[in-house]
Length: 161
Ligand code: ADP
Image (cartoon, rainbow, N blue to C red; front, side, top):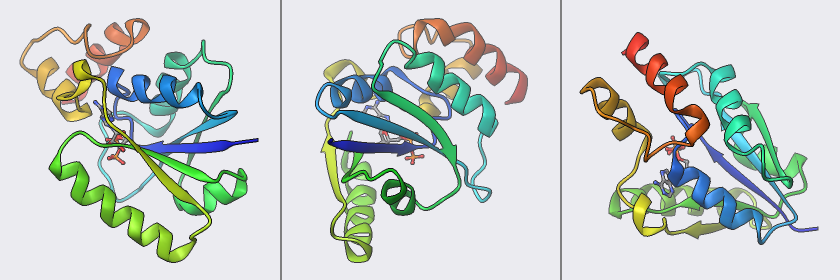
């Protein structure tokens, strides 16, 4: 059984995240999506909302399991017997963060590897913060987030930001 963990804030989930999840789920037997709960980070969506959105976005992918946790990604991966952590890489800023995180994780546990995926062309410039900005300036996010969640995400951002 090949098991992977895809961790992130997903504040909110975007088509970029979903594209990575779909591609990875066709390669691994099981993919755990770890929605990170980090009390030091300021999120627009609550922990429960971020988990719920991800469950809705992935409901048609049978080998994906969505969970929220405040544990260290490596500890979570070990508890699921996962051998791979999945990350996306859009640009040099991501590169710097991801390579640092990768080296750090490897120094703690070299049995768990990190696989990096590049976004599909449509999602190259897509980020959760760009989605929030777009809503704030009255833009339409329907091309950037899963269809079922357009209204929900728009309303919450309008109410909170
Ligand atoms: P974090 O807050 O931990 O950076 P995010 O929710 O922003 O988490 O993203 C989780 C992962 O998904 C990260 O590896 C990030 O690089 C990747 N990612 C974010 N947006 C995209 C996108 N548009 N295309 C591909 N990967 C993405």
